Image (cartoon, rainbow, N blue to C red):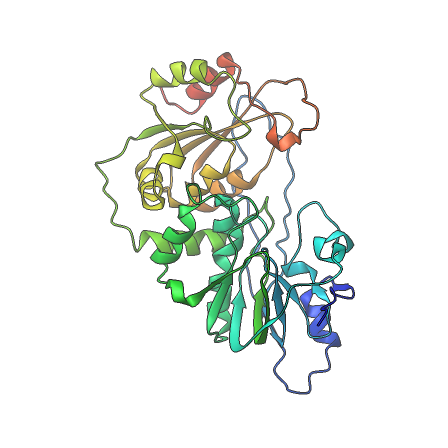
Length: 367
């Protein structure tokens, strides 16, 4: 039997709940209260960083979708009236009507289950930052909602590579989630469940709420035995193995930092637990902007952080996280680099002015 793609979409889950003729009384929408972010400290540095962030955090919620469907490798959610739930199935840089499900002539065959499935999928869950801040916090939203479920639906992400994404399994294991509790989305996944439980994103990409940072920090630090004598106190995070946003003059940068007792670390060589230990015991961290700074949530108050930027891509997310964690944050903007064709600005390389680096070191009192 041919299964047609959805006929339109709901921009917000609450719109589906408001319009759904719920004869069974099983549809549900619960708001989860959150606190507004208060920025206590502006970023320090040798020059001002002019960025803007969303002071308002999007509403957090958990909702029950009776006889909802989960489709595709990204775990998109379809309502019983055959519409896409955009706010829990969105795709980056696309409008709802451009979601790739609408390009299909038919969908894969349906598998039925009477189980209640909790969906915590996200398009770019292969990325460490997004896994930590857009996937795992939804487990806490589910807990706060008090809604019971049988299994959890996850996805690995469109660019998943096992050697780079072991943090997914390691973090789930630390949270006590057994593998038999998981349903992993594949390209041909199409599940119709008696109840599909969806939850909102915890915040914007550039604005991670404080309660999310506290949840992750508390959960993981409680389960990891920190070996305080086993790590360096001053670390420089290298992106030499990253596909983009590398520090072009890294050798020159590190030759300066090395004089002040810094050690270079490539995070992809470390396990999830080793990353937690490294950041929890560090006193100073210098790093180009990147997902590795997600681990700032494991730092102790007062830890000094120097984040390196390209001038074409100034994201405030790690300054906000540093604010939540009471870290001593400094930003250093690199030099202008001629743009490369067919390249997004978030991929631009970073070139650091050495004089500005030395001034930042002095400003942060690292001498």
